[in-house]
Image (cartoon, rainbow, N blue to C red; front, side, top):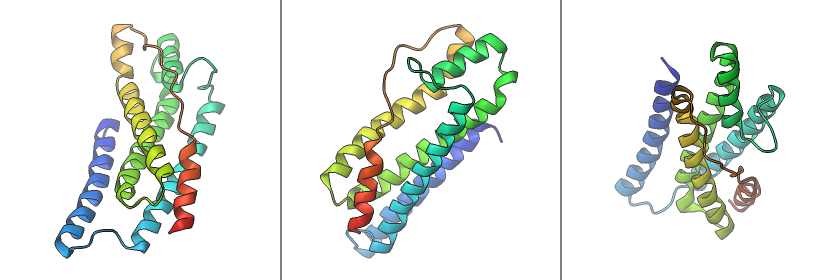
Length: 173
């Protein structure tokens, strides 16, 4: 199974879970998930954020971090210079980061209707915009590689406030 089909399978699975929860609420007449479901979702968000930190540390140690460029831009310049084959491990790590980002997006979407604070709602919207941009940039890396183009400048950074908002939500459940 190639990376694109793995990613599509993961996203489809997460969306199926979310859709199942929505259907459950409609059928049973519930208006909000139980506290246990909410807590489980928020704990999964925290787990994914921790996993993200580990992935970023791995990528930084692999030389995919610079002040002026992002991970995707650095990876593109590396595969242009050395070829794709020499950077397969880095691609695997970036793919894992991408899957993590999409899982966070789905989990945040699942929890958002139950959010207790406006801060979480705002940070969730910021994260969702970041995740969409991240996915678009990563999914197009080989198109840019093939045509020889460069990414347009992008100075977006991970919305780090989401971690504090998630911890606050967990404390309120």
